[in-house]
Image 1 (cartoon, rainbow, N blue to C red):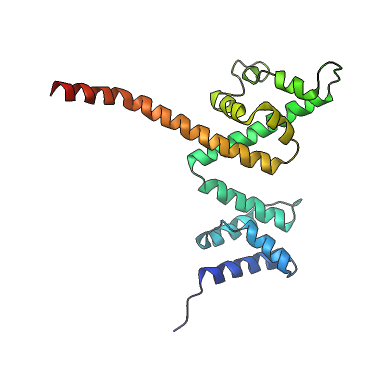
Image 2: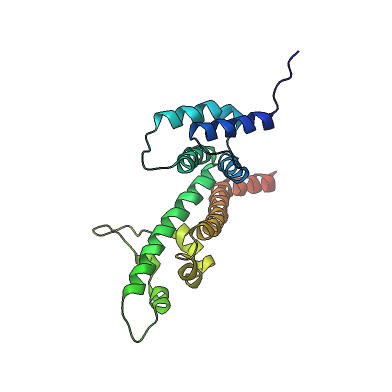
Length: 201
């Protein structure tokens, strides 16, 4: 009777197959890098992973970049609605703040530093041209308050990965708080009704 391969053996073979597919030389560090890129992919998804790789045309990407892109797709699909919203908001905030910081830094002003000008911007008023709706809503503004404008200014152009990790964490906290409050508001009339009926009893 043949022994069934373990999940670790299947994962090792998957990494080997990817390295052969992209003609990546066998090297302990390169193997570890490929394994790290696909660490969140479940063995049940390996066939679909290869199917997407073979269907996708990415002529300007190397093997590592292609693996990372497909892996990211699977990760995004596996995210909870809260995590997905937090990630999207963090990415949007990064792009917006990066552009604002760059614009502020390019302007010459003898009286105020770039940081002071950045801190003076009212984020509640930022809008797209010809649009009434502000770009940042209450959830965004609450996260900005927690982070502080100074922290955003310092980190937005320093380290994108660190910026997005911290900001995603704060967004997740804020979204969960927002959802809790929403549920409490919905439950309030029912709670009041129950208290009234208990008093009458």
